[in-house]
Amino acid sequence: MSNKFARKLAKYLAIILAAAMIAGLFFMFMPSLLAEGETDETLKSKERDEEELNIKEIANKYIYQIEELIRRYKDRPGYHKAVKALKDYMMKIDLNNLKVDELKSLIDNFGIDKSEMKKNPVFVGDSSELFRPADNLNRAEFATIVLRLMKVDFDKSEIWYDAVMKKAKEVGFIKGDEFGNMRPNDNITLGEAITVLARFKNIGEAIGNTVGVPEKHWSRGFMQKAFIEGWLKRLENVKNPDRAIRRDEVAALMTKVRGLKIDKNDIDQNIAIYKTYKDVGKKNPYYYDIIENSN
Image 1 (cartoon, rainbow, N blue to C red):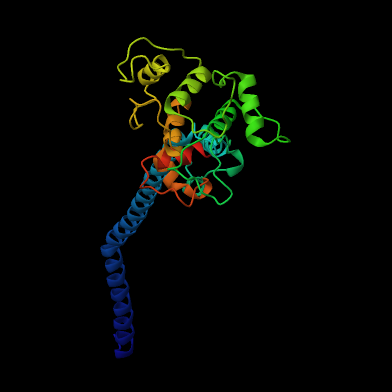
Image 2: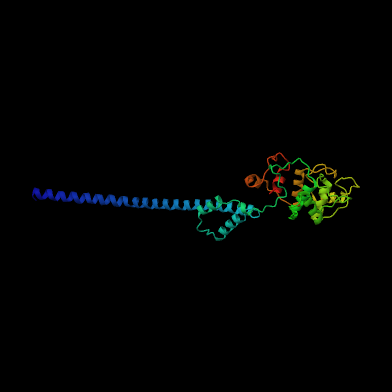
């Protein structure tokens, strides 16, 4: 064998040996490489599963919030359209394809619609936006409140207190004194106010005197009935039916007579849409009664 041939053979053998070594290394590490590929895919799948789980958890929280909004606001004035939109969405929701952005948008855009508010105020205050809570009410002012309760209008072409008393007498809830005088400018007494409201509600009189008014007082039966009905719970000095009644006390009385359920939190959160007065703050024990009965 010549030296030249020997060198060529050695070269070919070296090439074959190198190729074999490379192939061996490839097959040696291929399972590991495949395993790494499988691990990456598994991790990606796991991440996708975790992401889907997080989306579902967030979506479920939003769904719970929506259900709470429906429950809390379904009977509140001003929220009919907003609640209906939530109900309509929940009726069509695909639980297998929850859209977090849509759910969040529904919650963010939920709110009161002022155009829905059904105003039925029995108090309107004066032209200076004052309520004058400590002032007494005269008979014509009280008659006006009751006419508003009844949603009965009166002739605006006449002097207002004459027109009001005329309509009140016509409707039948206020009567004149023994001489037929309506006395529009006289303060209305507690006994008179209760009697008028008892006639308005047609609840009649009651036997007994647990309210503690003078036994022979003409308003005793109506005062006793009002006491039983719970109308007098928050009023002061109910044993004296001849005392004048203040404007803020009448607001508390209206809450009872009208059967209102005041949502203090709602008033606090949405106070901007309520009629308020410069001279009535939360320190007044009848604050919420005044606000509720003025809107």
